Length: 335
Figure 1 (cartoon, rainbow, N blue to C red):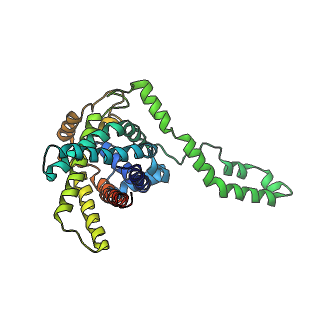
Figure 2 (spheres, rainbow, N blue to C red):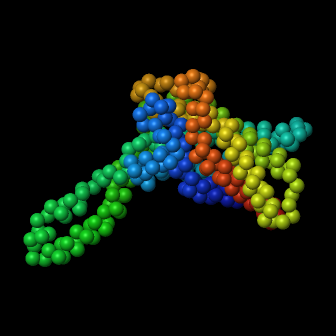
Figure 3 (cartoon, rainbow, N blue to C red):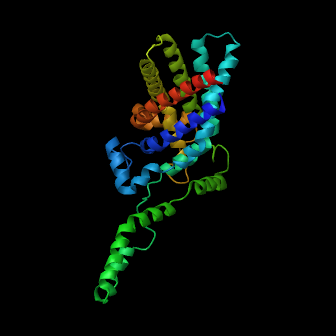
């Protein structure tokens, strides 16, 4: 894959992150809650959106957005570059194309997981925080203005009143700045994890096996389904219909892959997120976590967060494949 194709995919990925990150926050919140006994459980998708908005403000939907933004360029480059490389390597084994695509996808997903896992650890830690973005740190300037006796008694009280109005008008900006400064930064979280737990499988790389499962299974189905089904359905000569054909296959690819890999996603969130009892690690490894969730919460607990995941990765995955295909075709024609 050329640097230009990688740049196109990365830019598309950045736009997708900025638009769809609220769904990722909601998905993580559902995955880390532990059944009906959890006092902070969300009752539905709408209830989750409403609760986050009222308790944490609009910025609450963008917690943990910096790690995926930082990881986006290397992630997309690794995803598509390694897929192409694994395809070339597997072609020497004289395997049928129906096998090459999913196996190459599996290899690209496993490679991608190693790159993104540290970013995922920090992202999930930030997304799990329920502290409010709306609590002001700066002094309440409106209260000070109201309590200032000079506002009413001063001979030029009208001028002071205008100043008070301006303070009210600007209070939203002051509150936003204060709220952002109040939140622990991404780098502070990463530094704390490294300082207390290190780089290993209990620190910045915890949940690696679950991340390997999540990305490996997703890419295996994502690439395998898309290219095999696309090769079976005849090409349409009408460019608009051909675009819709690829879009529909890409949408199905992202949706099916999300449905199949979500148990690994839930396990990853439990391992990387806050443990039920501080200081006691309950969720350690991928398959033991899946087994524990199934035993304590039932089969459907392994599919928590499926709806927001599909809402994000269904259309997001389709757009990503279209950008990859059309930019790759354009480069082949022009260079």
